[in-house]
Image (cartoon, rainbow, N blue to C red; front, side):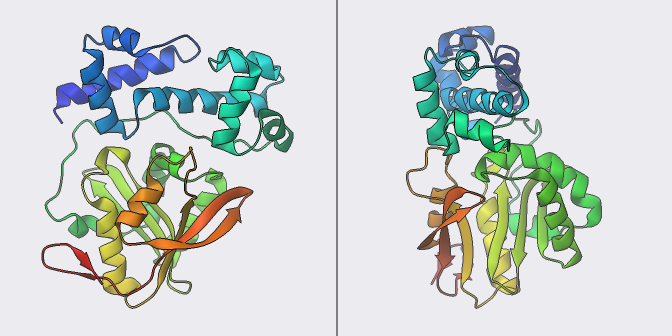
Amino acid sequence: MSIHKIEKIGEVISYIEAHLNEKMDLDTIANSVCYSKYHLHRMFTDTVGITLHDYIQRRRLTQAAKLLVFSEKPIMEISLIAGYESQQAFTSVFKSMYKQTPFEYRQNQVFYALQMEFTLNKNPSAPDTAAQEISYAALTDIPDWMDFIPLVIHGFPCLDESAHLEQVRRSIRQRQALIMRDGPAVIGAAGFSREAGSIDFLAVHPQYRHYGVAKAFLDFLTGDLLAGREISVTTFREGDKADTGQRAAYKELGFVESELLTQFGYPTQRLILPTIHLTTKTGEIQQ
């Protein structure tokens, strides 16, 4: 994607943030950047990984969740701020994403984000051999790793950044954390357990989801670190409306369904890579 188009998407994101509590539609946003709404819709989805409508909805629900925990505004008022004409409509959508009603969420007093403001890398590249860009993360990578988290937080329901930071530190010290960069930008990160044979964290910058980054991490792990092991990962359950494609991405990599779980009060599912996977010279994964 050209720098000009990336800048346009950046303008769209800035416009959304500035008008998050106002009525917005595709026509209005497209007019603000002088693009046709059809072209903008395709370009935004291809760049960010979700539609404009879904991005705005998830940003508004995130802001609503913050108000539920950190303010005393009535739920009806928060419903209107989030763009819903009734508390009932707001409750239905909120529960489909957060697995709790707004009232229950407020009672629990634990905030987590569905979607943070998206920040684009203005000079992305697509390395021919992505796996060569993977390295063990160092303690000096932690600030960039944590700056990367808001871009991928949508894939990890109930993620607590403080707890995640401590886990990253432990994983780095145990040489169980991997990182990939495109220049200075972090575009992928993974934490794993040799003992459990599990991938505990695997995240790809949405702007790079078509570059084979997740597959490169899996090839790296199965080629040496977890070779010959049954590898497990947990992700969204089938049909979860909060899932922006993580479950499908794992299944495309060869993972299959295992038991249903509940983690931090959130319904998830364990997936496993059941047999040894070898990477052929053509880059295809075979059993």
